[in-house]
Image (cartoon, rainbow, N blue to C red; front, side, top):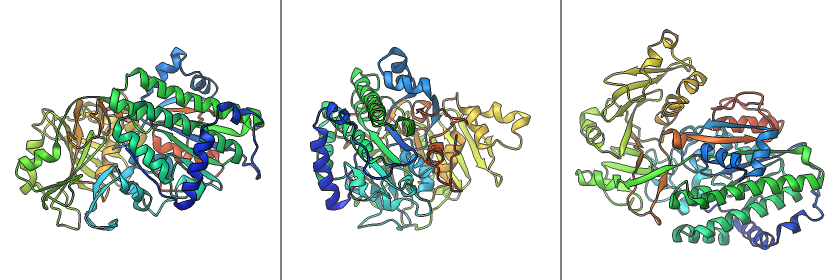
Length: 516
């Protein structure tokens, strides 16, 4: 997805300066090894998001020798496969890194959503899309109850991050108008070499700024793996080229730190926000509902269509479907059943639909699957999760919950353990976290393999997609220069662990647990 953060004139000036610096050869950054002019922090933590990287592909490339810096990072630190969040989509899936929260709790349940309550409205209409100019709204849409990682830092630095609350002026690299226009032009043309150039330039710019300024936290995303996977497929040789740029970033940071005499203070985390899986067919979900006689609103025509339903697709393998749009309070199932069961049944006949989730309240949700029946997922007051088959076993967990040890439910960590090797890793935790969020839809769809939910208005045909509950989308790599002393399980664990490395107090109320 694209985003154009706005940090005003200072950001534009910084953008122009950094483009000039980024054009220099790497040796310019390494010669002399410039030191920070202020007192350096005890630790400089760099979190590098290899956007869209699958753990199997990344680890295989490391094993083959194609990514020597990442392989060395694994050898001296540790490497893990952890679960991301639902929806597994750029933007929402950054909230674990930067707030320690699932996307729904953070206030951005998808890259497109319907503002039923009108609390986030910044203009006409109630639809929100972070693909385009409304990407500027992610910071203001975020929960105000929790501080971002940047707000916890004393000297933060961010680059190519859709979430930047806590960064001011030149602390946010790539936030100027010139860079945003260039990125948009690259996106809408499907310019594959252009994304690789952007990745290389960002790598140079961030490494230079980290070496000269020594921030306590630098958060940096490289989009090339994701962009090329969408267009070419995750197995394309050019995706490996994007992985090599990530590898080069780590090598550059480590070399600068070594020459500058602060290698012992450098900490690096490399992580991804989601995976990918191939797409063969595209369902025009909004058009389908309109064909069935509903008055539908969907991007880009959100001011037309009437008030029956709003279709908000993310990734493009998941979708929120909002019903009875005139209501300002969220309606729940089963009260919606008399009018909308027919729609549910029609959706479940489509080969594009794998799972349909029907939120019943903030802590329970029906799960329906074509030819696999339905079940109820519930989280009790003690935070334990229950799975009760009704007409079938859509998640394949009936045997697990039939065991006497599961009679009183499973903790979140136990859910992670018993579902990790399934097709839906961490599914019960992820379903409740999104279904219970105030801004989520009344029907939440997870696409079947080989399908997504958006057949129109994409600048390039997608050959790979993400966003669903499938393991190819939810499993992501996590590499640590300082080996974990605990057990990393989820991307929500990154935020509290980063605070531990920075020697900051870890606040309560997070969705993750520190592993240091």
